[in-house]
Image 1 (tube, helix red, strand yellow):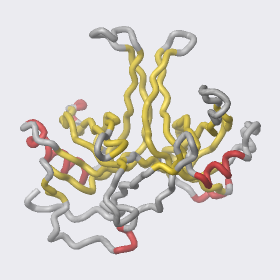
Image 2 (spheres, rainbow, N blue to C red):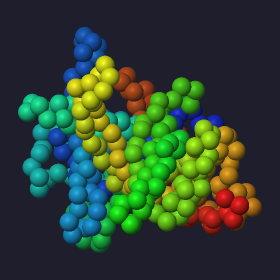
Image 3 (cartoon, helix red, strand yellow):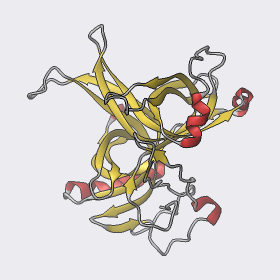
Image 4 (cartoon, one colour):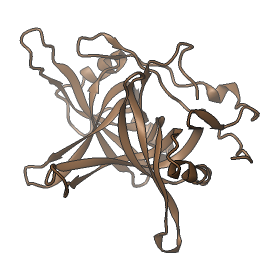
Length: 294
């Protein structure tokens, strides 16, 4: 797991990257008197799935990256579908916002900060066969379990992804289906540790993040709308059990340098425009060989 700098990490983040369209660009007013500055916001319609019939996942984002602001600002007031910019993007600080529609139906939206956006020509899509929507981070493995699924079993688990300051992080809970054979092998090996109440920390890559809403039925909050993030676990690049690294082991050959480097850090800004600390937690591209002892 590589860091963008040699300094100790000060901030956990969940990074989501992909290709999509930007629309609903707007300035959002902030309460607090004349000194309160509005912030720039937009919706990112991310493409995922087969290029012939992709699904769109919508993220309501605050534009934080300085270069992203320059790009997005110019599209205020422009919402013609034919003029919406196609971009490659990177989001940070993913979270879910459940709410109730005017009709009374439960709903949930995905929120994040837009850290990076690069304009693409629309003909770039002609070369695409499949759109990926990857989310990377680190978090604790919870409730790994085998689902029978009528003779085609699969593993499901929950990941408590870390977000925020290292000394006082928050958790983003993500329900996942393990969609890769290697990841399934590794998660399955962790089931006994989780059942023994050990802390299992993963560096993970997910694909196709989405939000689902529900209505709470128990407790003091019964009747309230809740939401959950759901995705597919496609890669596990590091495992620690009670602080001890068990995968990959040091004896394994390292991946080539050109695939271990992480994405370039993009500084986000807080409400006052000051840069926020962020540490991209990026897994290397190549999957290390499985360890016989694990």
